[in-house]
Length: 423
Ligand SMILES: *Cc1c(COP(=O)(O)O)cnc(C)c1O
Image 1 (cartoon, rainbow, N blue to C red):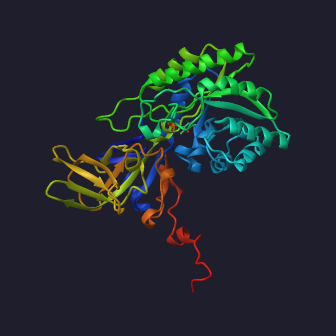
Image 2: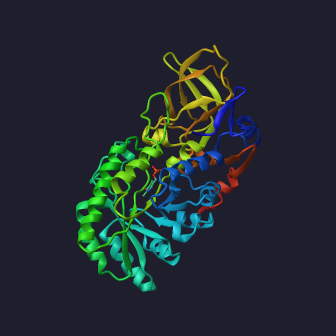
């Protein structure tokens, strides 16, 4: 459920007509709904009620300060994957104790920063990282609260490029090797290995892979306890999928069904739980709005050329993902629809949002909304083709605010300078 809907034939973000935002900030732009963020957070936490669960928002899905602050104000912690995200989470007001630091290749500088800030948990992904962390923590006279991220060798059944839990993926410690590393961790200075972490991928649309992974985690916890390693905390990662394209993709399980499955698999073993959802919270809380630049008909295709490109929303080009695209002004009933490829202006063939969209007749200047763009949208944007990062807007009821403005060309190029040998 989200708060983007037609009223009087015009797409609204909550109570704000989308064309009013376009008039003020120009296109393209991202638009987030505070009410939708709040709703998604509540639905997810309600589904986990009674399970001693903490929800840590995966900042990598949307690192906008206003988005993070909205969630932090509701009680969320943050899951971060770099020193930069760690500082952004702190800037957004997240308590260090509610920050989980994940990531497959944390540098010593990043680990030192995490220790200096006393983050709540560091998820370690290799023996090498564990040894480094032990050395750094004991050097600083600190004890790191650590989870070992295990790789349960489960195929998430999602897009290949966003599956992380198969043993050939780079993530985590192969689950069969984990007990030995926990034993080793017990004797390392500066390390308190208190938890098991798992995250098997993103945009997962079936419970089965989660269930398989969580059962492995449960077995591991029971095995470790038998060995005298008393794990009392689990980090079950993120990854629950969202509906993207209502016409032809699998509907993900509901948060309630997910919560039931969590209870069934790891609910009875006396562990507190952390979850790291990103997409589930912000994906459908955001849209990208672009304007039609021109229409072009070839003998075989119709192209709708828009002013947003793959640099602004890269998921289609990078993963083959498909976003639903709808006109901001609803076509009157009885309008004729035709198949069109929606493409951007970037000089790459892969700058195509998707083929064969069923769209009403459009003209230059008409606005299109790309739905479900709140996660892995603005954060993955680049300035390829010297295109400025697009502004981000947040709507709250009948108000809207620019929460990241469009940079000027001078700002975009401010870090460049000529070497001394060029006159
Ligand atoms: C990406 C990521 C998440 C969030 O994934 P979503 O699919 O957005 O929920 C959570 N935890 C880790 C470790 C991640 O890498």
